[in-house]
Structure formats: structure tokens, C-alpha cells
Image 1 (cartoon, rainbow, N blue to C red):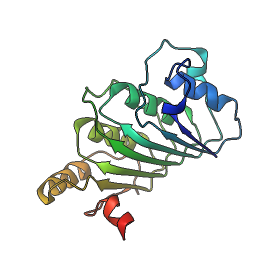
Image 2: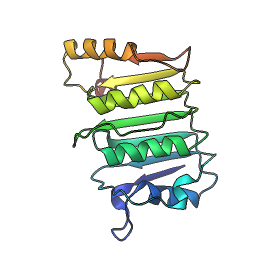
Image 3: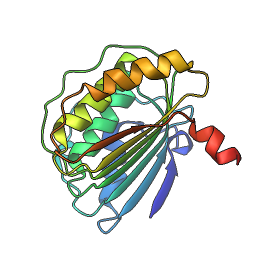
Image 4: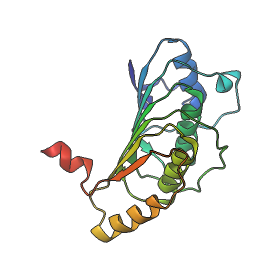
Length: 188
């Protein structure tokens, strides 16, 4: 298991998806990876040979304070999901700092079984990300979405209706859009 704050990487290292893959490459038996994107300024760099490497042992990926509205952070997350070939569990705590269009992505099969997204605000990129996960995950059993505490009941209902209309590759996938924010649950 490895928990890493990308902000704490030395400034002489380029903070990119390739850097993450290089670091993980030194830990071939790593099964659980937690990356914290707080105050992280990821850069987009040219493709290196490490960007094509598949990491077969990582089963659980937790991404904290990931800005799904930032195309670079979102692209980094999508690359990790595709490259971690045995990934079954994904947990994302979303944050909002930027807004950019959802990137062009290839819809390849991924092996996710469980997804949890916390602080969901219903932004275009967040919905696009969930659409991608549902379309590419034939083994998905459940996706739990905990909305941002500030969403109104009307907004939650609208988002629930929108999410339930999305195509699913899995015949058994449940979408659990809870009416309570994860923050409310953690406070109890």
C-alpha cells in the first residue's frame, strides 16, 4: 500500500501521469494506491515509454481532491484507470477548481467492480467521467455517488434522473446516488 501527496513531490520532478507511473513502476507488487492531488499542479508532458506500461497488481485506487474539471488531472486519472489492468475498486473525492471540456477518450474495457465518488457536484466533466466508467466496466457491481452537501434537493433529483439514463456495460451495475452527502455520514 502506498499513500502519496503529489504536492509533496520535489519541485525538480515534473508532476505528471508519467511521473506517477515511474514511481509505481518501482513497486511491482503494489496493490493499493492512494494519491492526494491537493494543491497539485500537474503538467502535461510528451508520451514516454512508461505511459504504455500496464501495472497488473494494483487493485484499489483512491484519488483525493481530484479536480475532474481540470483536463490534465482528469486525463491523468483516466490513464491510471486504463493502465492499472487489475483495478477493481476506485474511490474519488472530487474538488472543483477549474472547468474545461471533457477530453477525447478511447472507450476500452476496464475491470472495475466498485466505484465511490464523493463531493459530486454534477458538473459536465463529472457526469462525463461517470458515463465513461459505466460504458467501459462490464464487471461493475455498484457505483456510489455522494453529492456535494450544497446541492439542493431539486438538483439532486435532476442529477439522479440524468445518471440513471446513462448506458451501462454491466447488466448488474447499481447506481446509488444517495440523498446524503458523505460529509454528513462522516459527522455521525
